[in-house]
Image: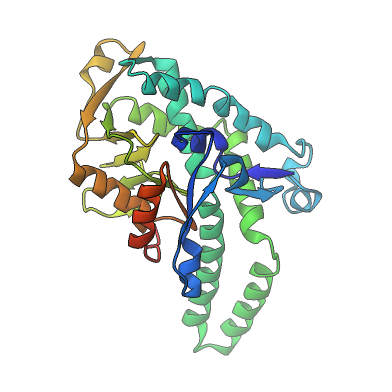
Length: 307
């Protein structure tokens, strides 16, 4: 079955009419072609065949998960996907406060969107090849170590679906551990202001949305351990900003509620946020209206890898 690595419940929020928006296929740049906007429905994009299925092959490689249902991960995602639209609906209506439970679920969903993304899978494959290359570079002077390295290379590269299997194993490990990493991130982020940058529908998004900008201005795919500034487009009108520099006194006074702090985004701010999408997509960018999509298609360039 087809399974979305970026769920339709997220992409749906960028549709302004008739459940459609505009996709810009930036992978055309790799072929020397110019990207162009195409109107699509979210359900038709950002998916892979059996992307999260725990196949028999996977269970043979990771026997600790052999008793789990094939669709275990897909079913676990529903816990966020079923409530996410209602939470975003409150934000769209301008309701100034979420319950603490809603705010936590929003964060769990956004982090989940990052951890389950196809970008992580592609990164796994690149890391595997980097490890192999590093071993060969370091052993080129020693024949015996070269022999060992050759054996390692054969073993490491023998699984043609290594990226998929290691990604699934990581996600299953988090589930088995009770999502301790996500819990830590959520507890940390709840202490800071939920700033909503508001535009007139000018925010775009991508197939790998959301970034953390560290104090040295480096952009990370996901990093919440210290000195973070997390940015995530939620709709064409709203982008969530959470910074370690902005403690939330309202939450400290009453942890049962989470206040939203709206800020009108000027053109420079909108441009900066959209630039993060333009610089750090995997294959696609998305815009709510055709005019924005055409403008973005003219600006896009080959992506910059994220840490």
